[in-house]
Amino acid sequence: MKEFKVVPIRNGTVIDHIECGMALKVLRIIGVSGTNVQSPVSVLMHVPSSKTGFKDVVKVEDRELDTKEVDKIALISPRATINIIRDFNVAEKMKVSLPDVVKGIVRCGNPSCITNLREPVEPEFTVESRNPPVLRCIYCDRILEDIAEHLQ
Amino acid sequence: MNFKGKDIVSIRDLSREDIDQVLDLAERMIPYAKGEIFTKALDGRILANLFFEPSTRTHMSFSTAMSRLGGRTMEMAHPSMMSVAKGETLTDTIRMVESYSDVIVLRHPHEGSARLAAHFSSKPVINAGDGAGQHPTQTLLDLFTIRREFKRIEDVKVALVGDLKYGRTVHSLAEALTMFGAEVTFVAPANLQMPRETVRQVEKLGGKPKLTSKLEEVIKEVDVLYVTRIQKERFPDPAEYQKIAGVYRIDNDLLREAKRDLIVMHPLPRVDEIAPEVDGTEHARYFVQAFNGVPVRMALLLLVLGGEL
Ligand SMILES: Nc1ncnc2c1ncn2[C@@H]1O[C@H](COP(=O)(O)OP(=O)(O)O)[C@@H](O)[C@H]1O
Ligand SMILES: [Zn+2]
Image (cartoon, rainbow over the protein chains, first blue to last red):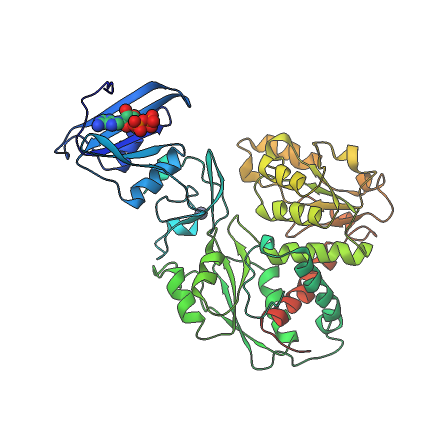
């Protein structure tokens, strides 16, 4: 019998090994605001973890994530794992992974970057390193300083 | 590399061999650039000068370069009134202009604009400065000036002096010089010193840059003083600016300490960084440097348009 700090969920997703302190940003990424959800969402913050010291965990019922959401989570928590729960068991488990090029999910932090004007392009970044993620804008060539703040 | 049809957006897109190829061709361009011999290599070709920001040297030298190659130049009528003010996107301007011309030269106040233009244009785009961003033809002509002077770039000792923090051109130059084996020294007041990212990049390329705030410390050893403008706006206190500007001013007193064949370079326009008394000395090279923009830009135009001499 597994031991849970929260009520087990039948179907849904457990986002595990989130960087400490990033749980609320993960909620924002998956569009949970508190008033717009039908099923329970549990957030665990600062729970001990064998791998990383401490971690945050987010559990959402009756919901699976799309690739855009997974890519965004990868940007703020490169070690996160996504567990899909079906009938109380982990049916699928995957690590988030950053692509080599990040397109359209974050804005450039440089206010005078051409992509922050009304041009018809999606912001695009090359991933210079992965943990922690370092993104460089392919247009203005600047490193994006605070990734979480610039998620679109 | 085969340059035909290629965009020139950032100096980082070019390898050492690519740069050598441009500079070798620029060497051959000199008598044409001086108007001693003539060519029609780009006869019938049209260059669109898109300067959304004022520029004297870059703008004129691109026009001169195109004319010296027998091509023509098209200008925007009222850059300030056009497009930006009317709310047209750069993308739309580029899509239109590319159908009127064979090569686009772009100066724009926003960083990344040249990359964006290159993305939408099927004609080659040459970045003539994008805000605080890249200015690859300036870097090329700087390298060209040093190479011509010393017949090499390797082992030449170059001190970059002034505002090293904000100008990306000087960052690219530091990297490019290191890639060619020059020894760079960064001379700047602490608040305007080279950013750590660039210092690290230079080290990654095998350089061992020296950082100092004292010009006197390096003046005896260096071959090149590359002087940049210190902008008043960087100092909240005008008195502080006056003091710093005075410390980094190049004059004959300072140059008495220098090697006899030291050259002084400056991307121009200068304000007070170099005393006019230096102009008449053997050290002054900033006007030659400005001229070198013509053969270098001729070489680039010839390469991207695939013209034959
Ligand atoms: N039915 C469930 N309801 C809620 N959380 C669950 C459920 N099944 C597993 N989890 C949680 O999903 C995460 C991954 O589960 P598991 O694969 O068993 O652990 P681990 O990844 O640590 O080896 C853990 O945080 C676990 O607590
Ligand atoms: Zn940018």
